Length: 345
Image (cartoon, rainbow, N blue to C red; front, side, top):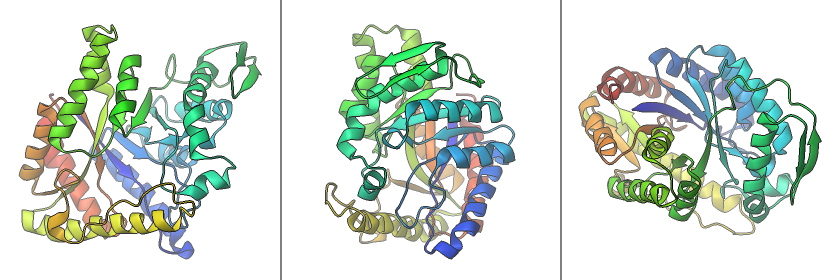
């Protein structure tokens, strides 16, 4: 199995942004030193609280400060990018990192209406353009004398330089929240990033995902490859005792969820998305959202995911409402006492 921390830092005030950006880079360096496989970066704008915004630029800083860890996008929001420009930027980042880039894509989140308003587009337009945007991104990476005549983009590109470090191109993975979108990727034989579900729901999703690929005509080798490149998400916190883990983690993760819920209401004047529910108490925090406990307890929960077919886990490990020394201690305990139990898998 492979493991990768997901970083999305929230800053309560503009004068704190620079320090939080610095601390986030330090956590990326720590993840590299501890042997994590991927550091996952996301993309959000105009919320007034998310500080590094652009994962391509931030990924370049991570590449310069790390040696081994892969740099993944979870995700780059295609609604906000011209595919040819993104191809050029990511080809450069793939070279700067010497082939450590994983490009996760999505149509754009429903977190913040101003993201679309700020770029002069809509969430519906992003959804319509996503397939063509990915097609043009791939062709820009790989084709010479590109003459692309699509519905949304018509471009001519004689040659893209630099060529991507990874050949034929960096791994391309699609974020899928709904079962429908996940099965569409299965029919195309593509790996996915999928969300926070119970073990039972995760087992169901992965089972249907594999069955759909077989029904679409993909052979066993390809299905196994897709499973080996698919990531599921969990929030994880490790401490010396279960009691300590719950006392430290649950309030921090609840505060972060409450902040996101409040922000989504404030940042969506058109009310095109419903706010996520805010857990009213510690006891209401669902275990499949947050796994908090000793290394042994957390290992048991990771083993449950492994046993239903998960091969890679994207780890929410650093809530913004938690002291950084606690985050770093949890990262160390997971890397040193949990991850090694699953490496031979």
